[in-house]
Image 1 (spheres, one colour):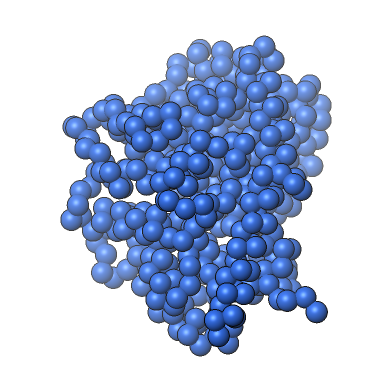
Image 2 (spheres, rainbow, N blue to C red; image 1 turned 30 degrees about the vertical axis):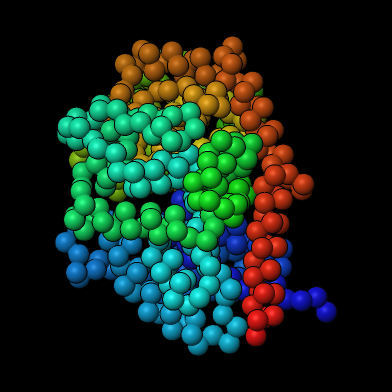
Length: 458
């Protein structure tokens, strides 16, 4: 009988952009023989695919901590998870007949490094962001660069220790960092999270050597060890659960020429304000491109308190060359369709990888967080992107925006060829024998070695 694989605990941060790639990774680990328990809150159990071998540890959904006066939802969630889940996880470890030999947890759950130390197992950080983004975070919270005039968003912050010496205006740097200081509970909590991540035993990326070699090598050098695994791009979830029938939009795409359609989507959470919506609608109306626009109602507005409803008469003016989706969309199927030529995106890392894997030209309009560094990769390093905007600080005039739409699908720009080349590299990485496939095998072998060493010591 083959020796059972090592037992690991997988702990995602409970937000779709974080949990979906980590759950996909979990199923890959199962196929390679590991014994996996995943921590979930009750509201996220529907994201699981049926699996007889995947064990779950369902813990309560945290509410806002009574001890917190912060209005920051992210930080309150981090606090709530620690206060509610730490004691439960500690008890579970201590009472388990065959406890995990390692914890694999999201980068926003830095406190699990303390838990791992207490129960005597190594913790591996799972980064749902790019390697470049983690390089920036580690440098920012370790070196603590000073921001002159923090109220002015164009002060330049450089990171000379990182390859290519990236520089960003301060509005593109972590809001928690630039608006706080040492002694502020929110600032201290997030810095502690980043430093605990950096002190962890290993790091795993939803990325590939072919995409971010310089930054993955830098992380290894910065951490002082080689326990760094790039296992992406992890495939996105199936589209069969979305609200609208996939065949409707695919049938519409079937009637369009190759590479002629612009797909527009700003992720699952962010909602354009009225200024952004009006400019985008005017640019689409001036342009003659065919397009799909995913319009969502949500909770995160950019630069204002107003939702951006579509202008009166817009849908009538663009009838015949538009497909408006109000709600969720089968994004992967749309991107991979032969008629889709360009993707206007907020540059979330999952959307970035989906666009890269589909080989489309990327029109970048980052809004917050790591989206700015992802846009830099797309435009400046990979050459597959065209800058369209940056939150509300940089918004093009509708005429200029229309011109970029037209250029993105006319086939004359260099981005089209580079996008196809990058797609081939990303696919090669995850295929059998590719760099990401080998890294995943290497991780599994390392975890199984931990199990063998533990058994030998008993």
